[in-house]
Amino acid sequence: MLVSAKEMLNKAKAGKYAVGQFNINNLEWTKAILLTAQELNSPVILGVSEGAGKYMCGYNTIVGMVNGMIETLGITVPVALHLDHGSYDGAYAAMNAGFSSVMFDGSHYAIDENIAKTKQIIADAEAKGVSVEAEVGAIGGEEDGVVGSGEVADPAECKMIADLGVTMLAAGIGNIHGKYPENWAGLNFDVLAKIQEQTGTMPLVLHGGTGIPEEMIKKAISLGVSKINVNTECQLTFAAATRKYIEEGKDLQGKGFDPRKLLAPGVDAIKATVKEKMELFGSVGKA
Ligand code: 13P
Image (cartoon, rainbow, N blue to C red):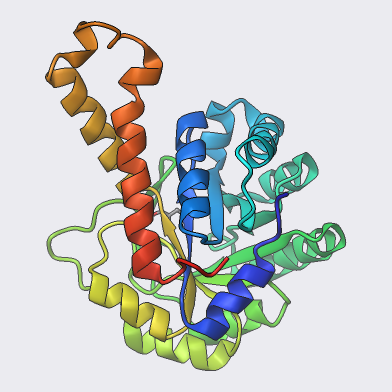
């Protein structure tokens, strides 16, 4: 059964570890992530961007697929199905379809409008037992074609949004989606410490989990980050493994044209990436 992200993230915050949000794009990724979480006895959050939602034939299809897998694969660890960077309308569509968690990304609105819209979503989500993530300070990089510039959030604004009763808060601290440039300044830990001071027990979310050095991840967790989002890294490892398989020509021999065989190396690569991240984030054995 799908659960809201609230309990798993509150536990992670108290226990000083982070739960991974792994974005899904298709059936194979979803199955690989769920099986790895179960094997490692780790809670997990499946992230769905609005673009990936359209690609996978809409939120109803995704809810049906994930619930079916949880039942058929015998998944007993806590699983949250979470809309990633949702618009206002998107958050309602996902909630109505049965998502157990939504992000409303109001970071591009003026703070007053971000607050008003976030408040409304929280009220409606609470009635359904759905957890809500809000964002302050746009995360840089590209997400579904929208390019942000990597702002650093204002801790006072973070407190304002946290006090509305959101379940978890994403705050920009110099992190960006996708690969980090050579000259990246790194995460701004001074600001993260101030945000943590202002928001207390609120689980903080780190977007752009791909390519952040291990020591920075560990430090961010020690400063209150309890959810870390990973997308690009799974895409990179999946693509590299699939490409290697094709280049080796194995798909041209025997039954290599069978999609179940063709995609198998990529699926194994995703499982390995998810395992590595869950170990780094400290969520193994925490289900
Ligand atoms: P990456 O694609 O950089 O891993 O970021 C994922 C993310 O933050 C999704 O919201």
